[in-house]
Structure formats: C-alpha cells, structure tokens
Image (cartoon, rainbow, N blue to C red):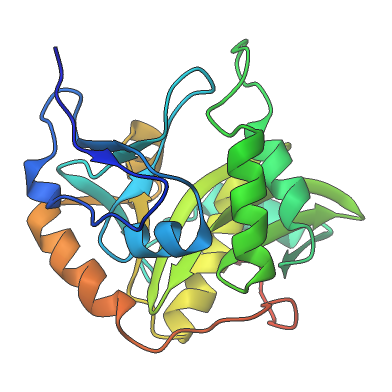
Length: 237
C-alpha cells in the first residue's frame, strides 16, 4: 500500500522535499490540501503541481526528470511557418482564459474527459483574476483555433495544458508565448511531464534536482503580474 504525506486543508502545510517523491508512479509526492491561490503559488514555486482525476483526492507531483522548454528553443517547422504566412491567424493574451481552459478540458481522442474538472477551472480562474494565471489564444477570423494556459510565479512560467482546434494551433500558442516570455527574461517554461509530442517541439528533460533549484531561484525574482491582455504577441513566422 502506498504511504503518502497528507496536506491539511485547515492550514498551509509545507510540501515534502520533492526528492522524496515516489518513483512509481513517477513523481507522486503528497495528497490532500486544497487548490487555494496561496497553496498553488507555493507549489509551483517549489516545482510541485496538482494533477488528479475527478474521482481522486488532490494529488501533488514532482516527476524526475522534468520536461521543460527553453523559451528561445521552441521548434516551429518550415511547413507551419509557410502555413501561417498564408493565414489570417492572430495571437492574443488573456482575452479568453476560461474558453481556453474549457477547450483544454474537452474530451480528446475518444476519451470521456480530462483531468481538468470544475474545481480546477474555478481555482485557476481565481489565479487569473489575481494576475497569476495566463492564457494565450490563437484566432482565425474570430474563431478560437488553439491556446495554452499556465501560471507565472516570479520569472518561472508553468504550462498547464494546451489545445488545437486546427492543425498547428497549440504549437503557435506555445511558440508565441515562449517568445514573449523570453523577451521578459523568463528562461524556461515548465512542461511538467515528458511526451513525444513535446520533445518534437523542442522540449528537453532535466534532472528534478536541477529543475527544483532553478524553479526556486526564478520564483523568488520579481515577476510580471496583472493582465497580459495589452501585450503584443507575434505569429512565429
């Protein structure tokens, strides 16, 4: 039987050392607590994130290795660049946060749903209202065709989920976001868990110990809080 540290709802319990997380399942660290803004920001600043299904308690993770993007290292294929030059696509920030979350939560590939439930949506909308959670939207003449959302803590951006309603939509959102983050001095975007799709776009794996040290350092730096709606985002041509 798995024995995990429990976080209590009634007080801000400290997260265990991420190096004590389980190897199987990779990175499972603790359970319980809540999704309050204070706890979520504390978690991200230590390299920890929530990930759980509707029938599970809140589960907290810190996998090893960690999947990250260097903000100047996202791959955009030549064919996608060519497609964009012929398109009417445009990119915005923080104009449709809830719509991006709902699109990310929609079932995919015949699955009944995703891990983004009502409690998660409410929690991240509150972070968004407080200027800590942000979205990037990709539009084609008023139709939302792709997007990404995540949380900024200091100079660390933690990507949570992205979606494509058209081919390339999520790639464009990610590339545009990383370009903006790079201009602002955010060196990495935390992509959390590795998969082949992320690796094909330029993500790299780093040892958890190294990532945690970097996350704590970046989270302690002055950030860019508040709405990003006025920030110009360019297509990755």
